[in-house]
Length: 516
Image (cartoon, rainbow, N blue to C red):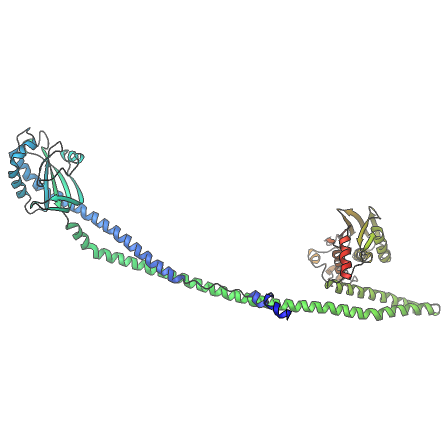
């Protein structure tokens, strides 16, 4: 029941861990197309307004030119009329007021057939002397009047000008206001213009007429341009959508492939882990089963040698010695296999107590001294304090030192020198073994602590070994909370440095609890 209740909280399996889902695609194409439509409409409105203003401005300039041309004959006829009404030097306002009716007749005759809605006459000082609009005031500024008096024709457009027509009705019109200097016959070459004629041409219908006449062409051009722009934007959006869709599909395919690969890797890792555990169990089981009969063989061989040793010939004695020697070598190999199996499963046992550096080194030398002497090698030992105490398993630590010394001897030339030093450093017992042997390459160093690893040079020279010693050494050192560091150079030699903490009180407690 407890297991079934916990199932919903269990970690996902390999398939669920490897699955990577893409987010649902956002319908961007529709929004991009809508944005394109709005963009085209906005651009059409802006361009239509701009072109309409440009066309209106062009039409107004044309109307101004036409108005200036229309006013020229009016100026000529009224100049003749003013010559009759005005004496040289006479005030314009005073001279025209009594003859307003006659002037009205002359103005109407001059304007016959022309689209001029109002005429003003201004004195040289800018005062309004006459207007066809009884309620009129001066419609141009003094600066504009002075510009006309100086001999320059002036015109401007007003789209909402209020005036009283000849029939007495008021109206707001679009007008072109034109100001021209007006001279009499006797004032042409003497005193300059005697008045400024201001004409108001009615163009209310003219501007819309001109702009509306080109409106279809303008709309056709703009419509065609906007349609082409919309087609281009739509093509870009569709191409972008196609590209992103293809990219999403490729990404989904890649994620699916990755999921499959991860699932396969999870399965392979599980199989490898199970195979490794099975291998460790097999090594432990086989080694244990081999160790029991081997121990009996060694013991019985020793007893036989003692009981009948005096009656053995030289050849038989050597055979008994070979049985004992090979039996002990096989026992050492089985012990290493058992240690490797235990270490791989985290079950390497340690018997913790206080030990001294001198004791560890002495026990290790008892094991490797015959090997070193047989190869004619010299061993240099350096210890700052043989009574240096630290916490650990004496048998395992002796195994570490003897293994390192044995490797240094095996992989060094006969007659070479091996160095062993033990020092205290930063709360650690620092054990260092140095040789001048064949050394190792960088590639071999990376695989040094792999089970059954043998360096290529060692194999080529036929040196004995199983490739298990350094695995056991590393497990023992790390079991003591220490570290191991190896530096080596091919053809130069190897140095192995082991650091074991001096204070192992917590290690001892942990091991006791594990044993309990």
